[in-house]
Length: 412
Ligand code: SAJ
Image 1 (cartoon, helix red, strand yellow):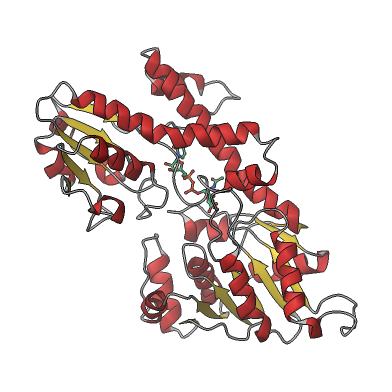
Image 2: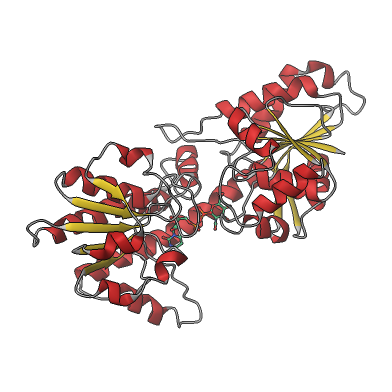
């Protein structure tokens, strides 16, 4: 069989590679010509463990091809972004355009899978769009009285940093528009997944994906609220949580500078958008996590007041440890906040996953990107924002005599 994966980002590309290494002929499709060119050379445009070797192997064996055009295929997997709009509803523009590319390539009997995180009802809508674009494939022309294509929602649930492992080991939720659709989609994932195939309906699969990330968001908000309370009460939140977690039924997550990434910081809003009046806890959790970076920045600004010409070193800019992803990063928000509040500050930033400052910071002439050891050297205040392994190994003697603000509890 042949598969087309639409969208070659953090999910689409690893999925394409997983299928290709199991012997499926895969065409990866992306609108970005540079992405297509780099993958065609066997290179990966972002950092993810084990992905680069997978891509170069699959490309050199001729199993994986990248293109800007959607080809004919037996299975289509849509893995395009579904960002949220100002009113917290989803922007389905990219899904719609993927559907418009797929529709003319259908001959009957194909599976069309939506992997992109989407609000409840999206998969059903997708199915309707296909039916409208290809009335010739819909009853009464078809023998079974149903459309001659199979539509399902199979949300990705892999953890950035562990994508290639979790791609194989995670259970897969497969939500079919019909039971037959779910069964057809499961055949695709059985090619590379060792996890259980959890068959359900499309809307339940959509909601389950959102609920998983909202669950984590609410739990992180709990930890972040504890960190604010502990700070006020002059308690060490890490100690409190460590002790509490010895209870057999308590497992509090780790507080931090806020919640970033394009998933947990986004997906809960789709639930709020679908049922605004009832999503109270989910909304407040989102707000608590979104406020955390601003609280941290304000604390740092306050700490600079006791120095005449303060120097501040901020370690880390990505949204979490050991990834090169800056989307919705709380660390970035914090540095931007500080840079705006203190235009005369000597502000150094260290980020092992960046060679230049991200766009959000490029406009500030008083912010410099340096190596961690350099940035710390004569800093008065050292702020740890991301728990990269790289920072863990920094020698503690370098921090002596400095004000240290460790948002991740890495150095305690
Ligand atoms: N964070 C904390 N404290 C914690 C855990 C995380 O502050 O105890 C922060 C991180 O630093 C980061 C953010 O939360 O800023 C999110 O990080 P994460 O590692 O929890 O999750 P993501 O966004 O990288 O990936 C999540 C995963 N979802 C769940 O664990 C329920 C992943 O399985 C999903 O596939 C992914 O979202 C997605 O694409 O939806």
